[in-house]
Length: 243
Image (cartoon, rainbow, N blue to C red; front, side, top):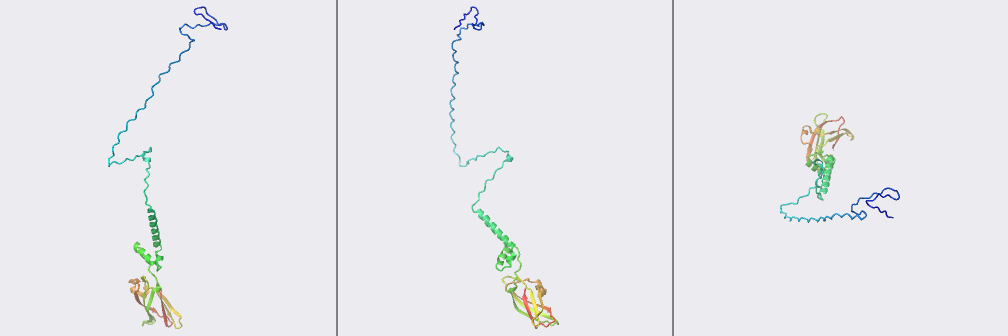
């Protein structure tokens, strides 16, 4: 059912709730007419890509110019920056040279430490002598009593009662010089029993000549003479030994 309300007439009431109906003022606009849609905003033109600037022509490098190395900058403070040194290029044979040098050094140390034992050997003494000639070390004198050869010997009364004069000559047949030997003299009686014996060092039988040469060269001969006290038993035999 349509409700007709006249304009300018008496107030109308709602048939249900009996409330007066308000009449909107006449604006000349039909409120029942559909509302036209709001106009859309004009579309803005899309930005056109800016053409890339033409790259400048490359300038030919002169022969003296060198390419610059890009330096990588660090954000750490200058005092905290650690620049690793460039690894040094090693030659393939440098390691073998180091090993060979260490081996030679070890052998030299062993030779110097055991030089006295090596010098006592007839086989190794030349090597030990050569090493000491280079490094200025000293070796113990060569000692080979068996290389002394007795050339002449005698034990006779000296003309003084109770004193015997001993005379001996010998030669060094060793390969190297060696000190004057110690002479071991043994006197025996008619039964062959030793009644007196003593070992005389070089200073005992050389006397005043002890200040001379302390060694006998290979092939060198020497003669000695000294007096000993005659034992009570008559002496009929004697014997010499080199020590």
